[in-house]
Length: 251
Image (tube, rainbow, N blue to C red; front, side, top):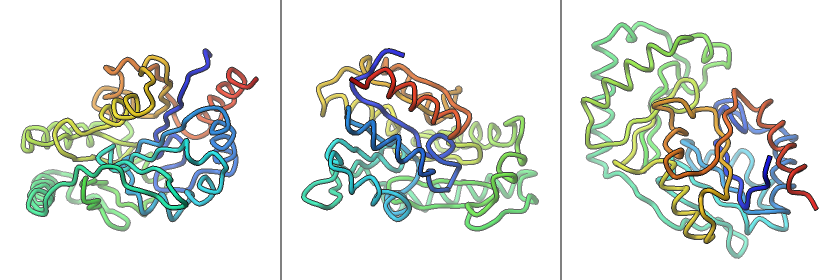
Protein backbone atom coordinates (compact mmCIF):
# COMPACT_ATOMS: atom_id res chain seq x y z
CA UNK A 1 0.00 0.00 0.00
CA UNK A 2 1.16 3.52 -0.83
CA UNK A 3 0.81 5.87 2.13
CA UNK A 4 -2.14 8.28 1.62
CA UNK A 5 -2.28 11.81 3.01
CA UNK A 6 -5.73 11.27 4.57
CA UNK A 7 -7.76 8.16 5.47
CA UNK A 8 -11.55 8.04 5.07
CA UNK A 9 -13.80 5.28 6.44
CA UNK A 10 -17.40 4.20 6.22
CA UNK A 11 -18.86 3.22 9.62
CA UNK A 12 -21.56 0.51 9.52
CA UNK A 13 -20.20 -2.87 8.35
CA UNK A 14 -16.78 -1.26 7.85
CA UNK A 15 -15.52 0.12 11.17
CA UNK A 16 -18.27 -1.68 13.11
CA UNK A 17 -21.11 -4.13 12.61
CA UNK A 18 -24.27 -2.31 11.53
CA UNK A 19 -25.69 -0.15 14.35
CA UNK A 20 -22.97 -1.40 16.72
CA UNK A 21 -19.93 0.19 18.43
CA UNK A 22 -16.45 -0.19 16.86
CA UNK A 23 -14.17 -2.60 18.71
CA UNK A 24 -11.33 -1.36 20.93
CA UNK A 25 -8.93 -2.65 18.26
CA UNK A 26 -10.55 -0.51 15.55
CA UNK A 27 -10.67 2.57 17.79
CA UNK A 28 -7.04 2.03 18.80
CA UNK A 29 -6.07 1.80 15.14
CA UNK A 30 -7.91 5.03 14.30
CA UNK A 31 -6.06 6.83 17.10
CA UNK A 32 -2.74 5.65 15.68
CA UNK A 33 -3.73 6.89 12.22
CA UNK A 34 -4.65 10.29 13.71
CA UNK A 35 -1.04 10.57 14.85
CA UNK A 36 -0.05 10.42 11.18
CA UNK A 37 -2.76 12.12 9.11
CA UNK A 38 -6.35 13.45 8.99
CA UNK A 39 -9.09 10.84 9.43
CA UNK A 40 -12.72 11.13 8.28
CA UNK A 41 -15.75 8.96 9.03
CA UNK A 42 -18.46 9.15 6.36
CA UNK A 43 -21.66 7.37 7.37
CA UNK A 44 -25.39 7.19 7.01
CA UNK A 45 -25.65 7.11 10.80
CA UNK A 46 -26.77 10.25 12.64
CA UNK A 47 -24.25 12.29 14.61
CA UNK A 48 -25.95 11.84 17.99
CA UNK A 49 -25.59 8.04 17.86
CA UNK A 50 -21.93 8.31 16.85
CA UNK A 51 -21.20 10.77 19.65
CA UNK A 52 -22.97 8.63 22.24
CA UNK A 53 -21.31 5.38 21.27
CA UNK A 54 -17.65 6.06 20.61
CA UNK A 55 -16.62 9.62 19.76
CA UNK A 56 -15.50 10.43 23.33
CA UNK A 57 -12.72 7.86 22.89
CA UNK A 58 -11.44 9.63 19.76
CA UNK A 59 -12.14 13.15 21.07
CA UNK A 60 -9.75 12.48 23.96
CA UNK A 61 -6.89 11.96 21.50
CA UNK A 62 -4.34 14.78 21.34
CA UNK A 63 -4.77 15.02 17.54
CA UNK A 64 -8.58 14.99 17.49
CA UNK A 65 -8.28 18.24 15.51
CA UNK A 66 -7.52 15.95 12.56
CA UNK A 67 -10.85 14.08 12.89
CA UNK A 68 -13.76 14.90 10.57
CA UNK A 69 -17.24 13.36 10.96
CA UNK A 70 -19.68 13.31 8.01
CA UNK A 71 -23.00 11.82 9.26
CA UNK A 72 -26.24 11.37 7.31
CA UNK A 73 -24.38 10.38 4.15
CA UNK A 74 -22.30 13.59 4.25
CA UNK A 75 -25.37 15.81 4.46
CA UNK A 76 -23.70 17.20 7.60
CA UNK A 77 -20.12 17.69 8.76
CA UNK A 78 -18.55 18.13 12.22
CA UNK A 79 -15.10 18.98 13.54
CA UNK A 80 -13.69 19.18 17.04
CA UNK A 81 -13.07 22.78 18.08
CA UNK A 82 -12.36 24.27 21.53
CA UNK A 83 -13.32 21.04 23.29
CA UNK A 84 -16.68 20.60 21.55
CA UNK A 85 -18.06 19.23 18.29
CA UNK A 86 -18.92 22.02 15.87
CA UNK A 87 -21.29 21.54 12.93
CA UNK A 88 -19.68 23.07 9.85
CA UNK A 89 -22.55 22.55 7.43
CA UNK A 90 -26.04 21.02 7.41
CA UNK A 91 -27.89 20.28 4.15
CA UNK A 92 -31.15 19.49 5.94
CA UNK A 93 -34.35 18.28 4.32
CA UNK A 94 -37.49 20.27 5.11
CA UNK A 95 -40.22 18.77 7.26
CA UNK A 96 -42.46 18.58 4.19
CA UNK A 97 -39.79 16.75 2.19
CA UNK A 98 -39.19 14.24 4.97
CA UNK A 99 -42.91 13.57 5.38
CA UNK A 100 -43.23 12.99 1.63
CA UNK A 101 -40.27 10.58 1.60
CA UNK A 102 -41.66 8.56 4.52
CA UNK A 103 -45.11 8.33 2.96
CA UNK A 104 -43.68 7.06 -0.34
CA UNK A 105 -41.49 4.48 1.41
CA UNK A 106 -44.43 3.15 3.46
CA UNK A 107 -46.67 3.06 0.38
CA UNK A 108 -44.01 1.17 -1.58
CA UNK A 109 -43.44 -1.42 1.15
CA UNK A 110 -47.15 -1.96 1.83
CA UNK A 111 -47.79 -2.58 -1.87
CA UNK A 112 -45.08 -5.26 -2.03
CA UNK A 113 -44.43 -8.74 -0.65
CA UNK A 114 -42.06 -7.14 1.90
CA UNK A 115 -44.97 -6.01 4.08
CA UNK A 116 -45.26 -9.44 5.73
CA UNK A 117 -41.59 -9.75 6.78
CA UNK A 118 -41.13 -9.28 10.56
CA UNK A 119 -38.98 -6.45 11.86
CA UNK A 120 -37.21 -5.55 15.10
CA UNK A 121 -37.34 -1.98 16.35
CA UNK A 122 -37.90 1.13 14.24
CA UNK A 123 -37.71 0.76 10.47
CA UNK A 124 -37.64 4.47 9.62
CA UNK A 125 -34.96 6.78 11.03
CA UNK A 126 -35.37 10.55 10.53
CA UNK A 127 -32.01 12.31 10.82
CA UNK A 128 -33.15 15.70 9.59
CA UNK A 129 -30.73 15.81 6.67
CA UNK A 130 -31.51 12.18 5.76
CA UNK A 131 -34.27 9.61 6.00
CA UNK A 132 -33.01 6.03 6.39
CA UNK A 133 -35.16 2.92 6.00
CA UNK A 134 -34.09 -0.54 7.19
CA UNK A 135 -36.76 -3.17 6.57
CA UNK A 136 -35.70 -5.57 9.33
CA UNK A 137 -35.49 -2.76 11.91
CA UNK A 138 -32.60 -1.12 13.69
CA UNK A 139 -32.65 -3.65 16.55
CA UNK A 140 -32.37 -6.72 14.31
CA UNK A 141 -29.50 -9.06 15.09
CA UNK A 142 -26.49 -9.39 12.83
CA UNK A 143 -27.76 -12.83 11.80
CA UNK A 144 -31.19 -11.47 10.80
CA UNK A 145 -29.62 -8.64 8.82
CA UNK A 146 -27.34 -11.04 6.97
CA UNK A 147 -30.08 -13.54 6.16
CA UNK A 148 -33.15 -11.49 5.21
CA UNK A 149 -31.91 -10.64 1.69
CA UNK A 150 -28.85 -12.79 0.86
CA UNK A 151 -29.03 -12.18 -2.91
CA UNK A 152 -29.83 -8.46 -2.57
CA UNK A 153 -33.06 -8.73 -4.58
CA UNK A 154 -35.39 -7.29 -1.93
CA UNK A 155 -33.31 -4.20 -1.34
CA UNK A 156 -32.65 -3.79 -5.08
CA UNK A 157 -36.43 -3.75 -5.59
CA UNK A 158 -36.83 -1.00 -2.99
CA UNK A 159 -33.90 0.98 -4.38
CA UNK A 160 -35.13 0.86 -7.99
CA UNK A 161 -38.74 1.58 -7.07
CA UNK A 162 -37.87 4.51 -4.82
CA UNK A 163 -35.54 5.98 -7.46
CA UNK A 164 -38.53 6.07 -9.83
CA UNK A 165 -40.95 7.43 -7.23
CA UNK A 166 -38.55 9.97 -5.65
CA UNK A 167 -36.43 11.22 -8.58
CA UNK A 168 -35.80 14.55 -6.86
CA UNK A 169 -33.82 12.87 -4.06
CA UNK A 170 -30.64 10.81 -3.74
CA UNK A 171 -31.47 7.12 -3.11
CA UNK A 172 -28.59 4.87 -2.03
CA UNK A 173 -28.04 1.50 -0.36
CA UNK A 174 -25.99 1.46 2.84
CA UNK A 175 -24.66 -1.46 4.87
CA UNK A 176 -26.57 -4.70 4.30
CA UNK A 177 -30.16 -3.60 5.03
CA UNK A 178 -30.58 0.16 4.67
CA UNK A 179 -31.85 2.59 2.05
CA UNK A 180 -30.53 6.15 2.61
CA UNK A 181 -32.39 9.16 1.18
CA UNK A 182 -30.93 12.69 1.05
CA UNK A 183 -31.04 15.77 -1.15
CA UNK A 184 -30.11 15.17 -4.79
CA UNK A 185 -26.33 15.21 -5.17
CA UNK A 186 -25.77 14.95 -1.42
CA UNK A 187 -23.88 11.75 -0.77
CA UNK A 188 -20.44 10.61 0.33
CA UNK A 189 -18.79 12.04 -2.80
CA UNK A 190 -19.90 15.46 -1.53
CA UNK A 191 -18.01 14.76 1.70
CA UNK A 192 -14.89 13.62 -0.15
CA UNK A 193 -14.87 16.76 -2.31
CA UNK A 194 -15.52 19.05 0.65
CA UNK A 195 -12.71 17.47 2.66
CA UNK A 196 -10.36 17.64 -0.31
CA UNK A 197 -10.95 21.37 -0.54
CA UNK A 198 -10.69 21.87 3.21
CA UNK A 199 -7.36 20.04 3.47
CA UNK A 200 -5.99 21.07 0.06
CA UNK A 201 -5.32 17.38 -0.64
CA UNK A 202 -6.42 15.93 -4.01
CA UNK A 203 -8.76 12.92 -3.68
CA UNK A 204 -6.15 10.86 -5.56
CA UNK A 205 -3.83 11.23 -2.53
CA UNK A 206 -6.43 9.97 -0.03
CA UNK A 207 -7.77 6.48 0.75
CA UNK A 208 -11.42 5.43 1.19
CA UNK A 209 -12.41 2.17 2.92
CA UNK A 210 -16.01 0.91 2.75
CA UNK A 211 -18.24 -2.13 2.40
CA UNK A 212 -20.79 -0.70 -0.08
CA UNK A 213 -18.59 0.05 -3.10
CA UNK A 214 -20.88 -2.03 -5.36
CA UNK A 215 -23.21 -0.33 -7.91
CA UNK A 216 -25.92 1.54 -6.00
CA UNK A 217 -24.01 1.25 -2.72
CA UNK A 218 -23.64 4.44 -0.72
CA UNK A 219 -19.84 4.09 -0.86
CA UNK A 220 -19.66 3.61 -4.63
CA UNK A 221 -20.47 7.28 -5.23
CA UNK A 222 -16.95 8.24 -4.08
CA UNK A 223 -15.29 6.38 -6.97
CA UNK A 224 -15.81 9.14 -9.61
CA UNK A 225 -13.94 11.60 -7.35
CA UNK A 226 -10.75 9.66 -8.15
CA UNK A 227 -10.10 8.62 -4.55
CA UNK A 228 -8.39 5.20 -4.23
CA UNK A 229 -10.72 2.70 -2.53
CA UNK A 230 -10.51 -0.57 -0.61
CA UNK A 231 -13.60 -2.76 -0.35
CA UNK A 232 -14.23 -4.76 2.82
CA UNK A 233 -16.85 -7.27 3.97
CA UNK A 234 -16.73 -6.16 7.61
CA UNK A 235 -14.64 -4.86 10.51
CA UNK A 236 -12.22 -7.83 10.48
CA UNK A 237 -11.01 -6.87 7.01
CA UNK A 238 -10.91 -3.19 8.00
CA UNK A 239 -8.57 -4.06 10.88
CA UNK A 240 -6.17 -5.62 8.37
CA UNK A 241 -6.29 -2.53 6.15
CA UNK A 242 -5.62 -0.29 9.17
CA UNK A 243 -2.57 -2.44 9.93
CA UNK A 244 -1.40 -2.12 6.30
CA UNK A 245 -1.92 1.64 6.42
CA UNK A 246 0.07 2.01 9.63
CA UNK A 247 2.88 -0.12 8.25
CA UNK A 248 3.03 1.96 5.07
CA UNK A 249 2.88 5.35 6.82
CA UNK A 250 4.75 4.91 10.09
CA UNK A 251 8.20 6.56 10.18
